[in-house]
Image (cartoon, rainbow over all chains, first blue to last red; front, side, top):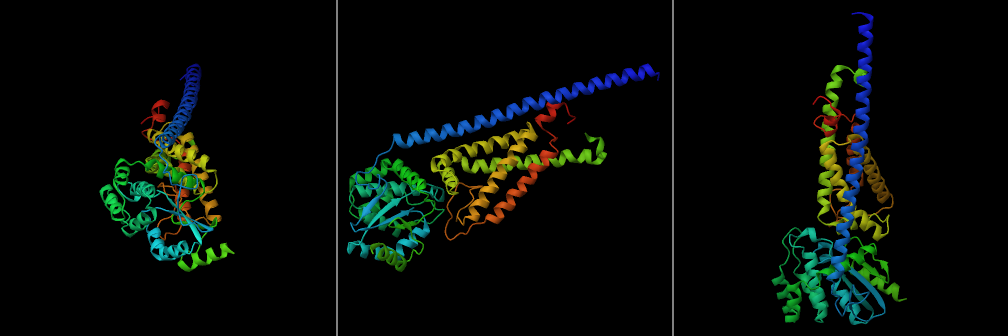
Length: 241
Length: 164
């Protein structure tokens, strides 16, 4: 090969390399732009959907007339010490808590020592195939409107379905309501899902107060660590001082 | 670029990177897919870290699953792999920092990595150590792609004119 041919070949190779490098640069720029665009759009979609869900919540919201604490809880008793109980009717530990302290709470209420504010939140919808948490919380709101929250709350925990099951169906929720003396208005509210959006709102309000697990029990605003009957009584006595 | 590598490594590396790319894509698609069905719960999971005000946590919780799915799809397609891997690594570092932060403050939460549950279930204890180990594993996948972004069966490869 002559020197001239060699030089020509080398020059050609350099030009090709430069072209390839330029092509790679262009591809890198435009694919990067595409990636950023896709991620921004995905983020906006998420934001948009979440905003839509927020609107839905407020659009369908029916707040039970008897609800206290910004319409997010039901009060039992009229005593001076305030107890806040955040429960999910699906949550097994809530069931255990209820069975161990329900008697103590009844006594404290009867002795006019405490006001118990129940916040029926729905954070375990995934634990049943029928979003039992939301449906049961909504049903408890209907029971409260019918003046039977305390009774219905008890009977729901007494009949608590297992985690991972289908939960109790609406017919069973109505039947349990009838068993504590609730009537047709209650049945209609359960069937229509009147208070489902409200259950979501209560959950939202609880989350904004950093209530991330159930049961969360607060005595006079302070988290109760020892959730036994003795622990509760001691905390109430301390708060009453 | 391959001139410094032995011919054997030059053949093998794109395959290693391809496995890393598809693995990381699967991680994001699964992580996002498990959360996208309940954005409110995803928001609560973010809120459980007690780092952001609840309203901010809600937005992050809503946006995050979509970002994860989008990243998964981008990696699956192999588009701008180095950038996608870099963003993945940045996200993973943020997640690891969040878990360490929750751990150091003694919070009793589920990391919400592959679920939308911020609250721990019946008597469960946190598994922060394992969560971090797992995320570091994913970080290694992202690292492989950051160093060797050329993979087989990728849009990048087609656009660059690589031999497939």
